Length: 435
Image 1: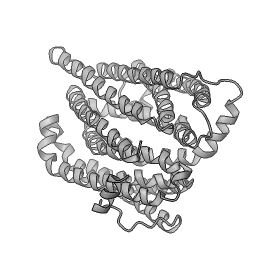
Image 2 (image 1 turned 90 degrees about the horizontal axis):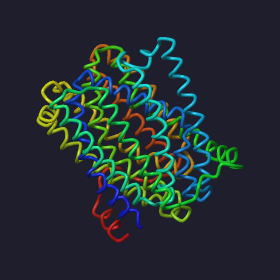
Image 3 (image 1 turned 180 degrees about the vertical axis):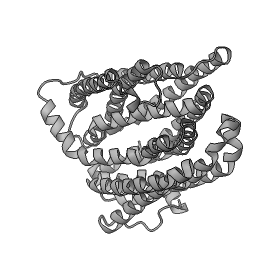
């Protein structure tokens, strides 16, 4: 199937995901309130950070090596099982030591339901790892219909479970524990889907013998730079949350997390474009047309993000209080500020693909490292004085810096000659139409 159709169907499948994500955001926020939103947001980011930290970039490298036919799905799964078991044991020991030593508050912004939260962190980490590995196998194999179906399943599951929880909440008030239990159920549903899909499409059991060292060396040789780049990128996107927590109150964290989550919903446009471009542009047969194809989809991504961002900026003052309640009015200003930087963040996601497919991911690492320097400097300069608005401007500085560096490197080091970066043209449309 051509790239355009794959992206179109993927974006089409994102529409229920966007809708369900917005509905779940509204329902869970109304259940939790500003303080609960802040607490749950910190827990969610803890899971994401620990998953990223322990993954070593194996899931990222999986898609590349499957696409380039340098490894197979059963070999990857064999390595993944060993990696998952080792990481789960390490994470369990770490959290147990935190709990037994009385230092649980070092990781959590609450002293309530600590055991359940730790169980959620361990279970969420393990299941998300499985989902990311199997998803990467399907992405690398260009079997994108399974990814599209997973998005639809996630959307309907979110609506059903969180809708049911909110209806129950109207008669019997619930809080953080109920939201955590529903979140665990949703991850379990996704895991079951991916395991059944693998059995149907590939049907081969994991290869557990004789592949561990070979596969680990193969993936690690490629993924380490990308791993550190993603790790630094996470800090670019999330470090301000923890600094806001340190310098303000937990309700301010809730306001800011809502603003962040709403702007990052635009990633549901850029991530599929970037994810589908990777295996296509990694194909040796695409080398001659790589720059042309990349330029078209970069401009398509930028134009769509720009239009949606302008609409979101104009409607923010009406929509946010209407959906989330007047108590979240304080989220409007940081949301509007973050839309500026998020435009460049979305473009960086696609731009980074060019370094990835040309085996120059070291430049992605350099870009995120420079961005992190700006994040740290401006976070500590602006957050203590300006709170969540200062955090938003600090993020904008980092996002713009990362994008500017990627553009500079790809142009002057990799000879990527694209003068029009942002505006999708009639010529682009005709080329996609005739693909």
